[in-house]
Image 1 (cartoon, rainbow, N blue to C red):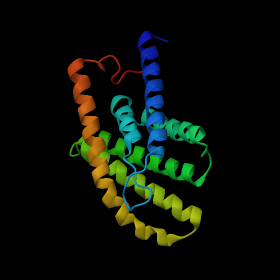
Image 2 (tube, helix red, strand yellow; image 1 turned 45 degrees about the vertical axis):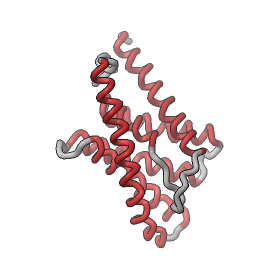
Image 3 (tube, one colour; image 1 turned 90 degrees about the vertical axis):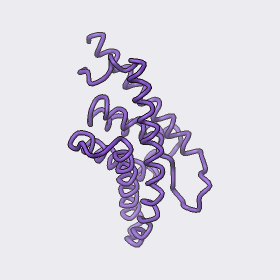
Image 4 (cartoon, rainbow, N blue to C red; image 1 turned 60 degrees about the vertical axis):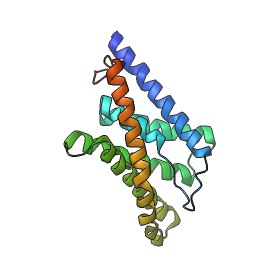
Length: 179
């Protein structure tokens, strides 16, 4: 393995670790809203960063490893919460990767908002299947409305991170390199 490949592998490990830590910490936070299940989606910042730097496959790896490791750390592996997190993470990763690769009309904020919406829809679909109750779909507008500000927040955060990294040249050796 080349030194470039080693750097990339180490950076991917750091992205997985950061996403997992954010996932676990966010699971411990209580957002003072009367809407159950609302989270900021900080771990999605890391997933979108991985997609931006390396593409869909590595973004999906970060998302899947984050959900798996986060659920193992929190004792929720294979629970309904794990299933909700998994479907949300996969759905949001797919949408964010599609928009990032195949469109030019969306900013990172727009892509992040779409990812938040896809995450909410994936979780709601999983909840309907797990509980075998399609009436939960009426909760979708509430989740989508809360997904707008969280998507904006995480998109602004990612824009700032990318901007600062480009100014410092910190990511120059890591961006879009092959393993």
